[in-house]
Amino acid sequence: MALGELPVVWSLPTEDSRAGWRALWWSVGPSGELAVVLVQERHLRRSPYIKGWVGWSVTAPCDGILVVVSDGVEHRTSMTGIVPGTSHMALLSWSRLLLVSGRTRRDRNGSWERNAVVYSPGGYPVSHFCIGDDIDCIVTDRDGGIWTAYGDEGIYGDHPETSAGLARWDTDGIHTWSPRGRLPVWPLGGSAAATEEAVAWLAWYSHGGAFLSRVDPATGDITSYRNPLKDTDGIAVRGTRMLLTSRYHNRPGVELSRAELADDTWVITGQEKLRLPGPVVMRCVQGRDGILWLRAGDTWVRIEA
Figure 1 (cartoon, rainbow, N blue to C red):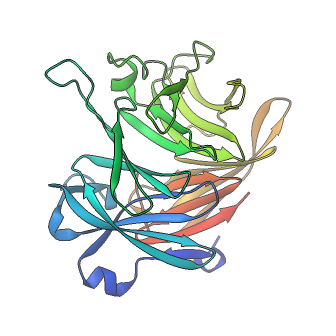
Figure 2 (figure 1 turned 60 degrees about the horizontal axis):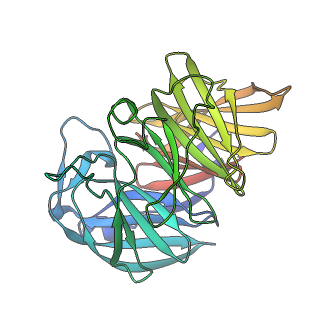
């Protein structure tokens, strides 16, 4: 599929780039609004080993700008108190924002350091808590639940809520759901997350292969399927249809796969290469209600299942 066929949702304006603003963390809310945090380059350090926007990191507490794009309308809010180590972002209910560090550790008293910060609609921190160690991916649901999938250091570490591989938290940092041994095999790491109305979908992998888990937060019921695509970095689900992506790392394209659910098995029905307006790297895709949102450089596009 050519670039011109994909609708562009938003691009970082040239004037922002020239003024030293860098687009860092981003997310899509349950209502389909795109949110991006901008930080001045003078507050950042760039890794020589990590490609793309994920290679930028905050060096000291700083301010920023939250850009929210909904129905083509852009709204900006100043932010304060952005801390070093931030690596994930998600939108919460009541126009709040969540910034998260993927890693945490015990402090000198043996307690886990708080790695999640909730921001008010006005852009300032209002609460801090811990949501586990070595977070690979994160997505929020319509009720404000925070879904997380963890990497191997979290799963095989000693944080009590990350060893199961998948978890749900509320906005007070209370652990509200765990698979409790109901996964087909023990996870090794997470690869993607999405929501479909009230339901959460988490893609993960293990020594036994790749899997997709559907969780209903109302009941806690979980259903797991074999993932038909081994290397998945994005999913979007609508009924019995699914979109899956596998990126060409630091290149302007992804392989898009379409799948159908038949007899409790996801089957690939088509594949195509998408040409994008910029390179794709880690955390370049998010799924909401059957729509895949893709970040390519500093431009965001979307495609529907």
